[in-house]
Image 1 (tube, rainbow, N blue to C red):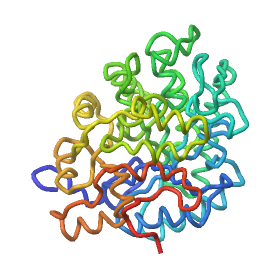
Image 2 (cartoon, rainbow, N blue to C red; image 1 turned 90 degrees about the vertical axis):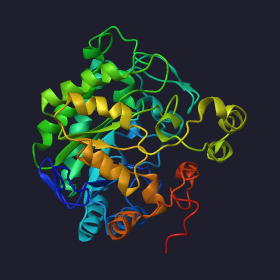
Image 3 (cartoon, rainbow, N blue to C red; image 1 turned 60 degrees about the vertical axis):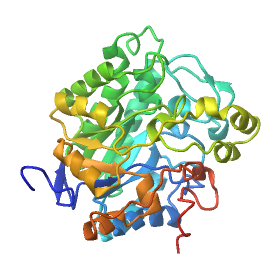
Image 4 (cartoon, rainbow, N blue to C red; image 1 turned 90 degrees about the horizontal axis):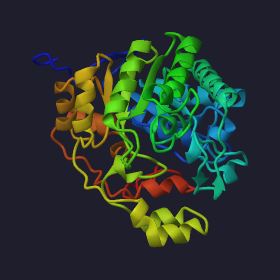
Length: 396
């Protein structure tokens, strides 16, 4: 610590867990679970940043139920998954890092056709992934999903995870309920901010009640959806205050954007439309190739591009906060520490350089190799290799 500012590479506590430093590999859909179970390729994917120095790596995305996957190839939390997950956590721990499981329900971002199960949304709406209508869960259905979060967290703890990250962002189910644009319900889960936040709070509470302080609990929360009529800062701040008051989470990871309506709002940088289109079947491929620019909008990249919004949360909350979005350079990490953020999270930079943390420890002033071309993003549909940086040499 220098002049009261923490060293990003010094050990730090996250709830009951001590991390060897304050860097986190953010959840990045790996595309390495073809049978919805852990593979050697998934283990290797997380071992690389663990061996490369991160404090914690995050496994994404661990759906809480089969219909909560974005497609049928995604891992979902059930007893059959535990042996593979234990093998993964053991491998990460052997490299000195902690490991978190991102749990949640995809809701309207799920592909019902692929999952062979209905996709769910707060209100009646069309699902462009499956070309079907989303189903609307009643209160009994929502109670089932809340308990599925608790069960997933328990399985994560049994599998050796040090933490779970509850997905409350990107218009996945809980985030869709938070959105005034997507949630038009008139029951206890719709209308006021308090009602729209009910599902998120109940899921977080159920997770805390299930695992207590055995593992750390974080939540990834949208600061804003990046679409007209969506969740905006004032309501998101109120949701964050409630989560803090509830005592259900140990930290918040602050994010933005909608996987359903405006995904590039989170990522910024180049938009490889044709590469995205190639990952979809017809007719979605044709639509994306010709009209993808309307959906995949361009936002110029800059370092720490979510910091402006995140400062407002830092000013209002005592909870530890995880800053993500344009993190890579050591100077950016130091800036986050100086502004009161307890942790920083990276995704694309670590795809390009899994050992980035070790490299920055050795040479703090070095340039980051990731150029935010975003050509890594369509590779999540690559059934051979899974998510990878197209500019980096193949993993040996």
